[in-house]
Length: 156
Image (cartoon, rainbow, N blue to C red; front, side):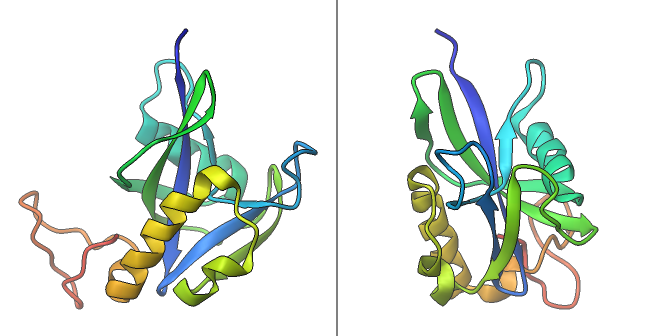
């Protein structure tokens, strides 16, 4: 059996994480998740993340860093979570969601997350609490990993 990857996007801005409330399928409706979806055959996971966030939220993003770990969704699907930098647009619930919320680290428990998203959300919360300036989107720097820009901060 081939296991496919579902990618979730941890989109952060101003020290807050974007949460999306599912509207479908019925068994998931009303619960919250990191937006994303299945990687298509021949598509890299970062490419899938960018495409899925464009389709679901109407924004242009870039995949930044994979959160360590993977979480089974069913025998043939596994969840990977990546941080994502917002390049343009304002997120809107266009597909599979009926509400979006930007949550501060102390608000992450205020929504009913899908079980498989919880470990990654906890990790993002730790990162936001330890260094909130890292979550304001990408700061491009040299390939050696050093940073430039006014804060010298790297995205999550």
